[in-house]
Image (cartoon, rainbow, N blue to C red; front, side, top):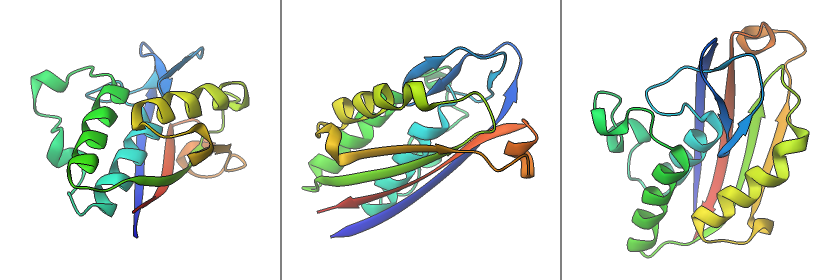
Length: 155
């Protein structure tokens, strides 16, 4: 068994779509990044890569590469899952938490879980996604950005 942890954070800005777990969520701001800046999916990728001792997403998908500009993070997650499978590893479970003061994410959690499970080739019951606020504290509480943590277990 191998455990991995991932973390990601992106700044909220006007003029970008807000994408979390592959879901486009209506909001006044989106996340700034080289790809679609999906912090949830990025944290999950880093957890998976870490558990497999494959480095991090910056090494696999550098933000200096034009071919990853505005990339769909679910597609990138698929590449990570292919690497995991090629190494003979299987995803036992993924548990992730999004930290965002707003918008309310509960209406989208089920679709996020379905999207992630589908790309990872596992059952929805193996994917947990939660959302919380920081009670107006820190950069997420001040609406400056959104972050996510993820842990996974590979066997």
